[in-house]
Image (cartoon, rainbow, N blue to C red; front, side):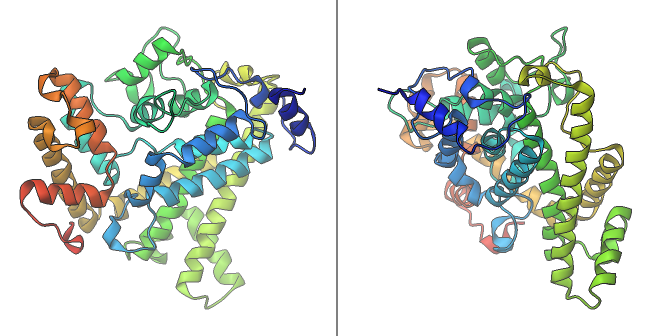
Length: 415
């Protein structure tokens, strides 16, 4: 009788997509923390992807803010629509570079699971509330969700994802500590979050090394999606127009090309065409730059990618500058707009009030969250409160705040 792994291996050899030597091979996965029998019909990374999609945290992304709060309109991106766009771009990059598309997609789908309600404002507020207890970091929170907080399975907490998916989730932006053990990048000042340190001690994720190429393309797909959809949403909101977009030379050239090809195009179609071309140009650039870096490195395995001195998935220098210019434009005209800042201030107040109420009276939370916390030390109580608030959708957070404070926040007045 043919076992599952043999059956899957045969199926994988029949018409499978080209995979480069440096791609992660699901048949060579380092496995899961808790061993499970293989699937007869899906690779290990397909199983990870499916578990992420079916998780509670993934469903909640539909009602979490990207930039504009939920009441602003149905056509603005939520965390979920952003995540789906990132997954599509990640798969395109992975296919062009000969990587495992399922792993790249799984990582793209999981990358925002740890975000709070109300976007980055919510994260900043919760981080400040948690400052005395280790802070709050959405990357570490995503790891907590997939290793502890999701409770869907009979034999383990979390999703029991493969090592490759976990390391990519944690390290998609690069190594977290340098060869001497010092925190790097965004963690240089405050250190690597405790949740990551604790998990790494139990199931080492090689924090000094890069993640797989699949994780790297998922990370850069996030950058591309951000640039494109915030141009789109910023224009829909009226905070951007073609005149302001022309402040970025790259966008001005694309707009000139579109207007020359299709004069008198309706403004909505003009912006749609611009966004499409922005994504296309950035994807093409990443593919070309990554192929150049791969040719120089000449990796023979996914381990060679992890051991490299620099990432292989990247923008070329001109597109890296363009990426910065677009983000500066968005920061100046969208993220720091008076109306958006008003919404941010209101969201900040809601999150801080929620934390203060639940920390002072944990029994106000549902029983599965608040039970036993009256006798817990402050750090454990604070972390449980942060876990509960971080999982809320925008609507639920606003409703809970109104209930706890006796106030009322009509959707149209949130900011």
